[in-house]
Image (tube, rainbow, N blue to C red; front, side):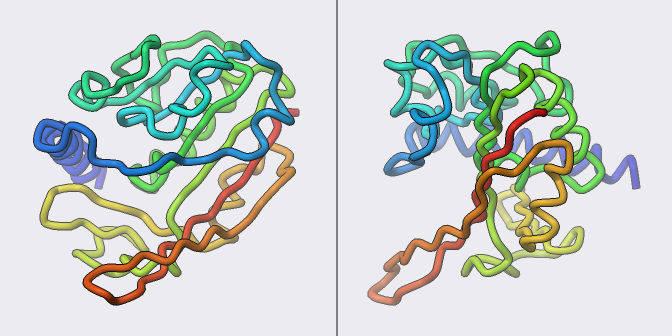
Length: 211
């Protein structure tokens, strides 16, 4: 099983590199974090973990100090953010304990296998300062893309592009953040029109504080 997991992670890394080589700016719009200005002081240090091109932190670059981290070199190269960019793995973060005021973890846990997800959360917890915040967003099992591809673990599907995606049940998602005090949880629904047909994009969003 261990060898199989390693093989899948290597395949996904290569697949993401290929994806960002073919698509310089694949993500449209911005991921808004409405609570961020209420919870953080301007100038706070934020880690955007599994940042891709930085879509989730693009809106906040002028007010906060943001560090992008991703395991795809091409995604970091494609980012328009004028900030520090670090090639790294969220399961083995190259930072000291208690470094960041906040962590953004948008659609990173969805692309980590089961045996590594808890390690990733432990690492994010470790690098956060006491009373630091985590903002997390992941796909729900209610999303219209759920079930597409080959199921390689429960609710985790590998598609032909070599990228696998996990879709979370609500309880499973919240259980990942047992070390945090959850101060907000919500289900986010976006209607997407494809070839004149409406589909539901469903995400789970939470805000937690390190206590």
